Length: 244
Image (cartoon, rainbow, N blue to C red; front, side, top):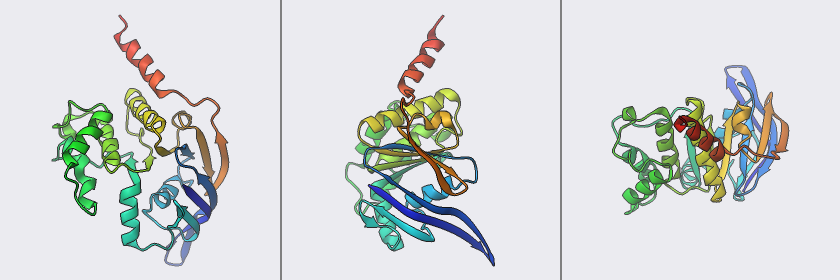
């Protein structure tokens, strides 16, 4: 599904050039659950922006579903991005005055044709993340974990093949973070391709494969022998809360 070959990204400010990505190469197959891990400043977010077609590399080759992404114009990139990729960020980026339902429906505005069943799609997406009873709530009426689940539902509304998540548990308490990881686990089990960017090994080890970046290069690419089971972890937390 994804092929990166010697991807480079250099930022230029005047005469100063700052290389961030230095020859990144790897492939991701459809249905994989991959974590991209590294410390701050290793190029994780820059790489995610390139994978998500939010930015272009300054060198190398990127193909998504055998389409050359480097040479597409902005309009073509935008159309492909809206149809194939869903985004979940550390900051929830919800509209304060809109209900959860309206926030989830927002990406459909950019579809070639606004779907007649937009309302039903949003209800289905919110139900899938456990917020069937919170559809009319606004962000300030929701906890941080619930807001992130709205953001996940919004990412799913266009039924993307790929879900890109950048530090999705970074602003959450441990229980809310586990709830989010359990959702990703279910989505992966249903066949969704998930790419998770994180600095936290405990989060990364929920994935089936971990790619470690260091100084703008791939330092390690390994399979996780026994991925952490977020659903079991969540069940244990709930059990502990209700235990007398």
